[in-house]
Image (tube, rainbow, N blue to C red; front, side, top):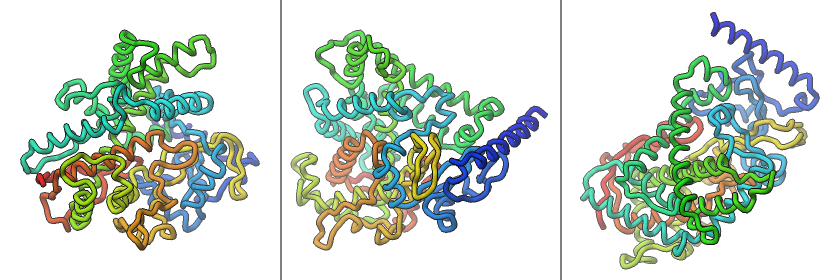
Length: 491
């Protein structure tokens, strides 16, 4: 009876909110969209496992700018390059807000760089971009850190002696070590128990957040009390993750030298001291903890998933793998490690890497934005604090921007002379003021990991290439890849 009463109350609240929105002149001029039903909004009209596919179909009826209700709240969906670019670039300030999901607030994840807004976001982003750009990692630069880490990964692959194995765990540890070097000033041994446990916890946490229950918690926050099991697990995960980061911060505080920062944490702690008398500063322990987690998560999962997806694609299309290796042999050879300066001489490899990022469509919905003020967009009024989905899938697969959008085709990034050519619709890191802060690092990692491993190994599937499926395990928010095994055959 208690649950029934709660649902009835929620339905009444939805109706009142809906009437209030319709009665407000700002909401009366919002973009068109399907009519919502009480409580659940438009959920029954959407594919619960792939919202982006439903939004693409709705675009045929309502156009590239539409209003959709996920639960009781309206949000605006932008479909296609023109709409996304116009909002995030041409009206950047108005669409620069970050929509912080209710679940994230309940989990106290609304601090740090990724989920912040206003002055907090401005201060943390400015500092983080400057620190990540300028930091040479002590006496070595970031490129050298990556090159060293790829050597460790190469040795791990050699230990398999050509036997089938799942690269997920080893690759995740290698990629994570790069961001660990930048943030913590150290790499971890692949068998380090604390490191292994941390990555396992991170993977489990992201998988849980990506399940439909996570979306339901955001649409109906009351469910965290009615169905508390998954929420309590999420909260426990966050607490364990912050326990690790807090321990790293304490370790840095004990050995900090104010005029000689070793890594990102040192730089942040020094900034905290400098701003200690500023009442408006955002440099505090809550923001440091969450920014570390933001960088750690972004610097581990996205790059490692992209690489694993890339290898699967190369095994399905072995002629592409052979062409990449020919270019590696011609430009780099076998006597030295790949370096970033090689990329400009390797248009085909560069094209393949860009096409992997486009084709896998890692975050089809993008990270949600929100409007920072009442905004006029294409004749519609979008009120302040409205959630906005600038859908990356619609840009990366737009038929008018790509010759064969549904096919893996490196020629999307090559001109008639075989030279690399950037496509303006390539935006896997989003675009505008909220573009991924780690874009430069991710591109460097992808190139060096990809070329070094293909320089040393050929990747062979354990099944017929025609049988390899490229479809993800989940594609609701963040695409996750099904586990697979391959054989790394030394060249």
